Image (cartoon, rainbow, N blue to C red; front, top):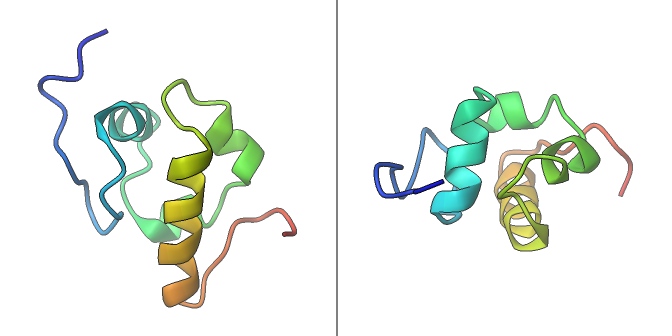
Length: 72
């Protein structure tokens, strides 16, 4: 599937790359507060979201005092 029409950044999420952004948009995860309601495993299960995206999201969450629902 092409990521040509996918934005480089969505909502208040950090820039992740178009495959990850496409997967998050399809799951309607467009804000850090939405991401914080899910576990790393749930996000990794989305096609296009990999370890790099998880690291970037985790850092952005930590900057706001948030985190994933699963323990570190």
